[in-house]
Picture 1 (cartoon, rainbow, N blue to C red):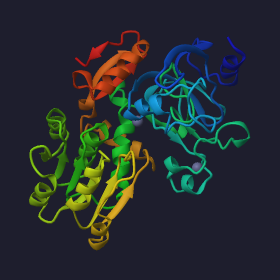
Picture 2: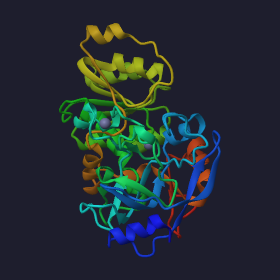
Picture 3: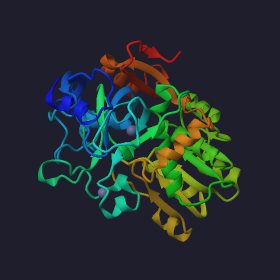
Picture 4: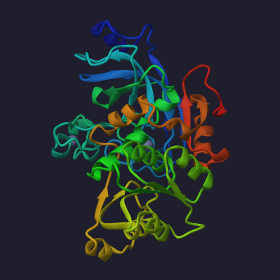
Length: 389
Ligand SMILES: [Zn+2]
Ligand SMILES: [Zn+2]
């Protein structure tokens, strides 16, 4: 047992029996280059726990990080060749407690949100910890205690990770590991609707883009009472899942003009539009399908500068919001819906692979092989390898 690992056991009677000294972890080398290696077990500090990772979902942002580095930032720069482990949508079992932690117990099943803000900047104090001013300042003499696991600190493509207790959410016994990994995605959708700042019940909501966040935005909007909920997407198979998650109408822009159709369905345009595609086309569609005084949430990051009809926003008193991640404890509200089975988030989970097959899992996610949407990697010894049964 290493010095660090024995410190956990001695300092806290509470830890899973027989914690190993070392753990398996994937690390990022050059762009696109992942290697399965061994790392010492990380040690939880004050207000932190050690989580044994049971499952981790792959996100489009992981694919971006592996290739381009951003938005991950390790030691103030690009994350390449820094012994960094990506992966941020994971769940698992509390394996050991840091000093003073009594909010969780060893053996608790938990899922995580990404951002543990510094807790001291203006935005953290407002609950906007995903917009922490001290993002990535967690090294050397710049140590502000900020963590965003999988972005600025080690993440979930490993057997264990350390998490601040603020990032943990209890998982109900009857929820599968795979479904529990989806809480960050559902929480991001929830945060978007929360930040729009209005009562969604009885209001029309359009979601553009049936990716994981878009599909769960449909589900969350419906659970919040929005009516009608309209999904815009070019892939019919995904639109079909959107229907199952609560879309009253789906619009395929390859077949009809989404702006005209939304106006037809809503009368004067949508009260709320959540753009989960983030292209110049969808930004402009959002502007023109929102009614006067309505609100737009950009839940996707356009890759480059977009040109759009700013004047139409001003003239029509339309509000435009950006969101970053899953702030204001939105994951807890999302979990409340999931625990009550208000929607079946598991409909977007399509494949599971063992941790050792991460590269295959990433390929499925990236190339959408076999209509993959959410691909999950599991550390369970009996993990399947392929499509969900
Ligand atoms: Zn993600
Ligand atoms: Zn902060």
